[in-house]
Length: 133
Image (cartoon, rainbow, N blue to C red; front, side, top):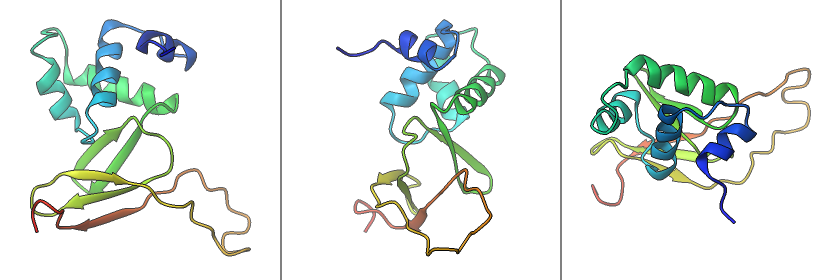
């Protein structure tokens, strides 16, 4: 049985407003790692009262509750991902698409970061995708 978006948000301590539900559903369905601008422009058509501030605040809440991650491959471009498990990203330098790829969990040599706590891990590659080659 598939859990509803509303119930999923509740399970993660988030009050499921219509805007939060729509934003999370959009993020889950669109695996292209959208920006706030892209999400806002696509959802404003069906939710005329939506603001960019609401989208930013919603992502802040999603990240705080570990149901979304922020991806910063370029300094001036922040994207979001509903897939919170550790995986890599590839950004095409021609078309700008961002793709997920699976990776084995990186094993650090014993003692490499002794005395440190790792809270986040990121792995990014840039180049040309299959379509642009």
